[in-house]
Length: 116
Length: 112
Image 1 (cartoon, helix red, strand yellow):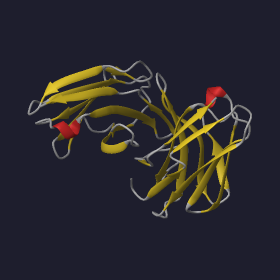
Image 2 (cartoon, helix red, strand yellow):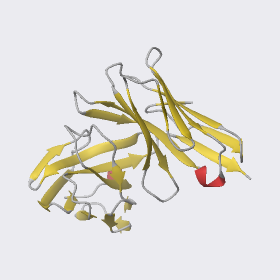
Image 3 (spheres, helix red, strand yellow):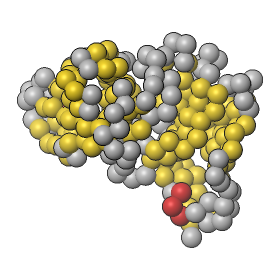
Image 4 (cartoon, helix red, strand yellow):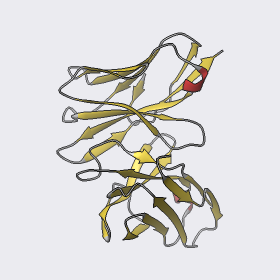
C-alpha cells in the first residue's frame, strides 16, 4: 500500500476512552489525510495535513483531533470515543494537493475501530 | 449503476467477459474524476483518472468514459479476471474548491 502503515489494524475500545490511530509513510509526501468509511456514506474526510504542524478540518471533524510533528507521521485522536465513531479509518497520502485533495490518493490498509 | 452517496449495487460477470461499472455524479463543477478499486480488507487503490477536458481515457485493460452532459462516468474492464473482484468506486473532485466526494461503490464479482 504505497509505503503507508497504519496501526493498529484493529482496535476495540469502550465509550469515553481516548484512542489514537497512527499513520506512517515512507514516501515523503507532503499531504496526508484521515478518512472514515461507513456503509452508505462512502469515504468522508476527517482531517488533513499539508505539512508538519499544518492541519485543517474535513467534513466530519467533530470529535477528532490530529497532529503531525514529522513529515512521515500523522496521528488521529478520538479524545473520548463514542459508538458513532465505530468505523474503518483510512490514512491516505498525496504528493501534491490543494485543499482536501485534487489528485489521486494512496491509501493505507485501514484500521477497524469498534467502540462498545 | 452507482450514484455518489447511495447504496452499494452489485455486478456479477463471467470470467473473460467485459465489465461496465457506472457512476452518476452530482456536481457539474467537478472537473476531475478517479476510479478506485477496493479489495476486501484492504485500502482503496487508484485505477485510473480523467479530467473534464477529456471524454475517454484508456489504461491497461481499463477504460474510463466521461459524459459531462448527463454527469455520468463509467469504468470498463476488458476480459475480466477473478482478481478483478472487488468494490469499485468513483470520486468526483472540484479542484477549484478543493472538494472531493466519494461514491459508495459497486461490488464486482467475477465467476470462474
